[in-house]
Length: 333
Length: 290
Image (tube, rainbow over all chains, first blue to last red; front, side):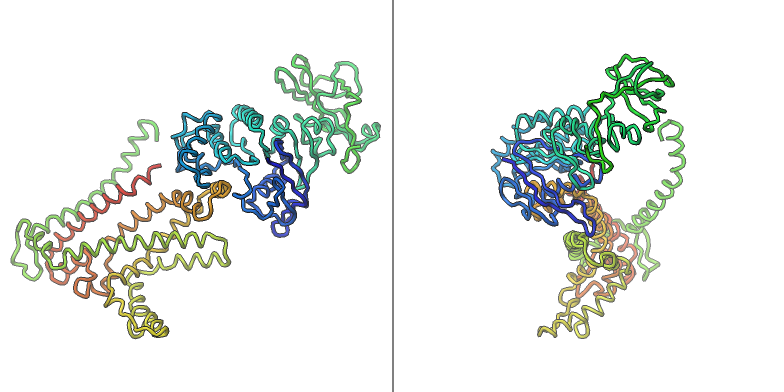
């Protein structure tokens, strides 16, 4: 079980309201990702759920029990920290066994569970090393191992991959997703990286300045962003925003169009521009098009083989049914 | 310093300092060794010359010799125990966010800046004095008979004074070590179900191991040579109750004017210090390895 319900949860540090009253339901077994720019309160929200911060107001319910005032250890949650927070003076085995030892488990039970966790995480041959002798990815796995053995009702991840290099990050992303499939335990994952959010989540919670901007599945957010913030935050490269007369032509204050929804043609189209920098990724090419008179620059995706050079004139045509329209308050029309 | 040329240049540049330090250390040691084998009593300048191990026999045969060694060890161990345990507790306390933290920290550190004889005199006259001391007043206030600290428990009183002097040092080192502990580790332990006492025992104390080692090693160096506090409070007495090896050497050299025996005592003290150092490095030295 791992159902978590936040109702009216608020956090203030002195006069600064970091999280205005917030409601959120997390269902059992879901992989929920909190995503947002740095300082948006996503880590604070996670720490509130963990019990490492006191809630100023509101209720946190875990599996039907009011956990608002409960100490962290009693909530049945396990957390993986950004710095991994391994105990440097203990071997990997002792690190993983620590929660069991604190719970007073027998030595046999500790050994059994540690071995099982090590097997799942490919750590068996490292059990007698110290954390200092492990690579970043291995440390990450030890931290996850320490969380697994407690058999928590939910896992909390606080930007666990941000200290890893890019290749390892992709690998760990898969491993964590795989782990979720295997354990089917609720996971709450905090990140500022929308790619991590899109690839891993069942449900994404987009946060901005402590407020929830939108909650939904990855593709739902991608296809139907509720406002300008979500539209700009989800998707890479970013959605292009155009305001002014061209937007009014579509009956909106601002229109947004994703790079992959703009057609490129050398001689004919709706918008005329000049090719700037192009990024060749092999499968795709992203062109930055200037001097369209619509926005400082538009990003356009084309196939990997499109041959356009810096300074060429191009014509762009947006796919009419893929245009997102927003009013002057940034809300979707 | 990676090329051959820069390495040899570095050695060349370092050599004058190293050589000077070597001479600085070797000359007094050799002189002490030399005097320890000479008949050299300031009261009888005419009697001189090599006398073999007689000075050593003489020093070891002094009535207070065994007491002095025992007292030295008790003093060192006692002060170490009090300062390490007390230092950890005070460091834990002033690491908490409390009102007036800056001033509290300065107050805690300040005893370290008081010169040892001054500190000892203040303790002797202000606190320990059995008629006018503050402790005597306190005892009288709660209806007890004043306790003559320096008369009844001379070594204990000196341990108290020296501990007071060295507590700030231990606190300071342990406080900085405590502050270098990542809060995420403590939070992780909290999530893992460790109550405060276990968090201290399993996370904080191992983290402090290296700092505790540093405190023990540095303090031992200075505690083996404690002298001023004894001189101004008990003069090694009553009897030999608070005579340490250092004080015994002083007594031979400057009260009995027997420089030869004092030199032998100095050599014995060096040997004792090395034995203590060896034990310490065995016991706690491995904490210094990364």
